[in-house]
Image (cartoon, rainbow, N blue to C red; front, side, top):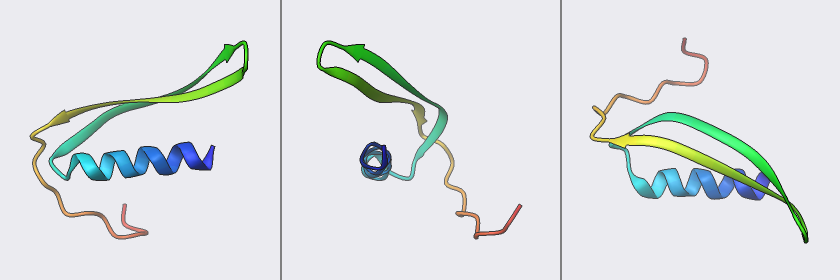
Length: 58
């Protein structure tokens, strides 16, 4: 699981700051060689750039 989440974070970072993540969904599928975990990310480009919130901000 941690490897999947790191890969997703790296992908979002490579896509760029001009996206807005609309939804994320994680799911597992049973395959003959075991359970596969996958994550879908739904986003749109061209989102206005907003300052990143500081930890603890609401």
